[in-house]
Image (tube, rainbow, N blue to C red; front, side):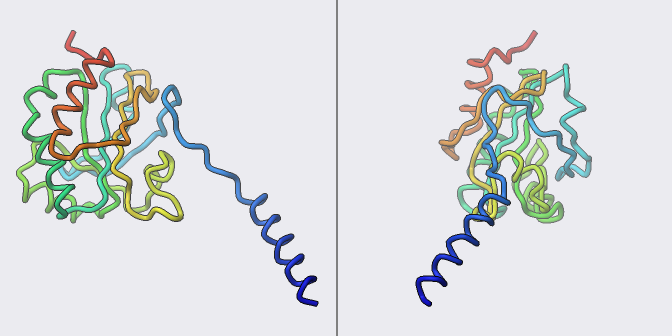
Length: 177
């Protein structure tokens, strides 16, 4: 009887695994998922608004008001002059709600918007979060003017991230006209 129960459990697990499609991780060259997210600046930011005009960088962080996330956001602010010379719209992003990110941005005096994705629609689509990873992984996505992923940085250094982004954009050919 025990043997029969284990066989049934294994068969049921196999059926469940077949019913849930495996999520393919977004890769360089893939079209970036469309998004429309609120920013800490009170505006709604859409990928479509930048199509054909600017590259887009989205630097995900796990949680507002924590040490690493604070360092990362400050690094982008400190390197704002270099980033603003490039044809790029850049954001940090988290799954925190819009009000939390607004307060976080204000506390740091940020001069760029933080995007909020509390429903995890975009973060799940990018693979930054999933059913096991509730808080976003610290990954940064570089999206070309054509809407395709140019690069994914999965080894972010929080204290130098702003200068690292500027350097990577130049390396990718995203330079001032």
